[in-house]
Image (cartoon, rainbow, N blue to C red; front, side, top):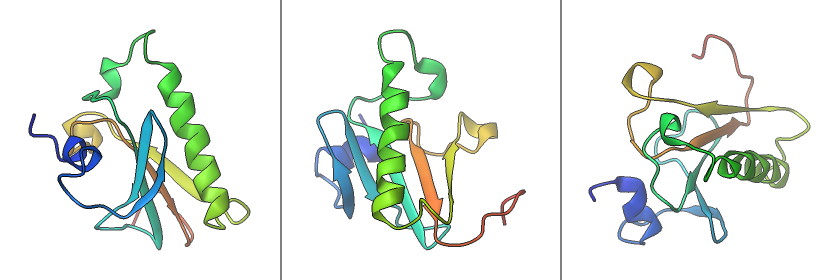
Length: 113
């Protein structure tokens, strides 16, 4: 498989890891869009949110709870942070392995920019 996130999980590509458990890996984005930008990914390859099913849907809550834990550890919980999912090309997904963006450390505006 030629998935960059799978290669990070396999330690074929280095990453600045922020968190790891038996189901997830979280690492700092190499092109951060905020002072704090962490990507939270499942260790099992799932291409898009559309590929979730009843067998793996609990993974989403685990990813969100991990994001809130990381936000607290990074001092973002009180001031605020943003969680972002992208799905498919028009949704802004450019790596086809589901991932949750945790962004914080500055005021977030909508639309982003």
